[in-house]
Length: 132
Image (cartoon, rainbow, N blue to C red; front, side, top):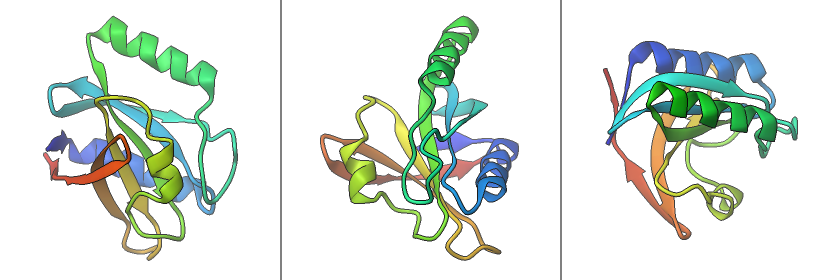
């Protein structure tokens, strides 16, 4: 399970909507299973069907997380035109151990859907997303 404050989930959805029709991406930090911080990232691929985080931004976020005593809990990205489930590319590129993956679907623009997953060694498991 991942617990995420409503205001952070709303900010992630807003980031996705603001970046439409391109995919957006970011990192959520915290401790245990509770998200406490949100770091929107630049999708350097500027694509509507895949993302790549800016390495400099990623390094800065990891540094900020360490300084605040948090850890990276979630990597998120949007699917502007497809469901909130990992694509084959998402599964192939899920290389960061011990993090969850949050996907925000804007397939129905007026009804964004957010779902969380654990992806390890090509195996996808849905994870309960608890909004607090």
